[in-house]
Image (cartoon, rainbow, N blue to C red; front, side):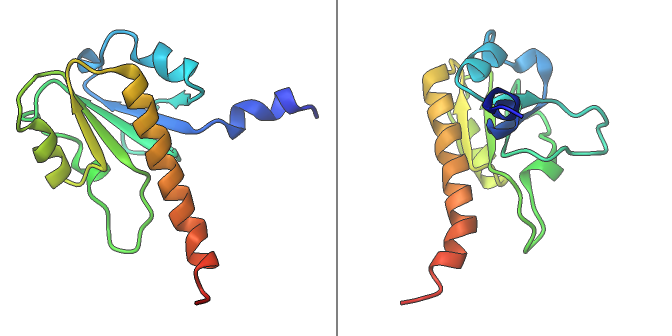
Length: 137
């Protein structure tokens, strides 16, 4: 097995959910170019394993998939970023109040989105491994 065969599995996995029509044009291309492996749920009842979840909404008034924004205590959930295609100024605050790790409103600046995704994934991974490292003084 060579390094090229291992590369796709080492790329951070990003699960795309929500309103497909609310996705900014070029979202998938920008995420793939930034090095993310994109996945979509085949069965709405099953959430595949991912390093981050991107939820797209046309408006904050749309009911977001609450099971993706909330989590049970003690259950590890990947960071959730909400993209809202409307420009309502209260959209990000409402998404954060529902449990999103981050939220952006249109127009979405793809380099900023990718940087935020990488930062959230890095923080999540460090928090998971940091618990083991911070056992000492």
